Length: 249
Image (cartoon, rainbow, N blue to C red; front, side, top):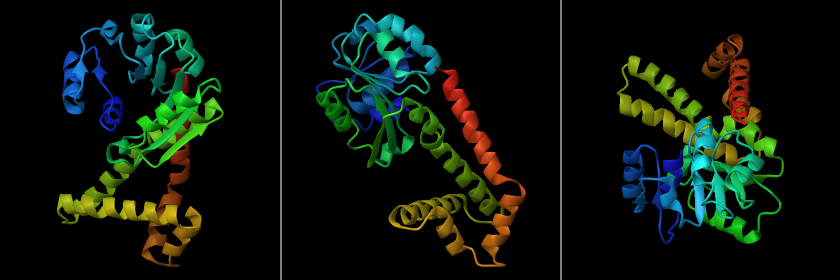
């Protein structure tokens, strides 16, 4: 996710990239026109730190960079890691949590955020500038718990959609449709449905009903979803995602 976000950042004076696996840092630096560094201390001249490690790696990372992050602007993408922990560990009250989604790569990402009221308007405007090209929807929450609740929806959500595309396109392939066409058909259907939803005053339920003719093909499929408790499956999956996010706290 960190790499996806970095590739859409607007121009800055210099980008410094660090990863314990140096080849990853070098590849990202080459992609975004930055410079890879071999140790965290090489980041000392940075004004903004974007933290994109795995949540369970944060404690170790913080121990290596806390001496150079004091009072710097910190942007954390870590699921479940509370803002007060991030600020305390890195010695900076200038911190913000964000949860982007991979469609930032095409400028269609959803980005949720949480920050303390002490964050200055200058820092907030800078963060908004950073995400300007990543998507039309940047939503800051006033309750930090909400960013954890929505992580499994908006942050992980693209994976669920891609899995639905995989399943539906595989069925088409088995029926003789060429694979690339099958993926295109389902992908365009989902993109069009999303655009219709966002431009309509109707609720998702009303839009679904508009597609569903009594006794028709759509109703037959929806009845199978209901019979096999699709809604319950989604509820359990989203709860599992939330539980996992909170385990990182």
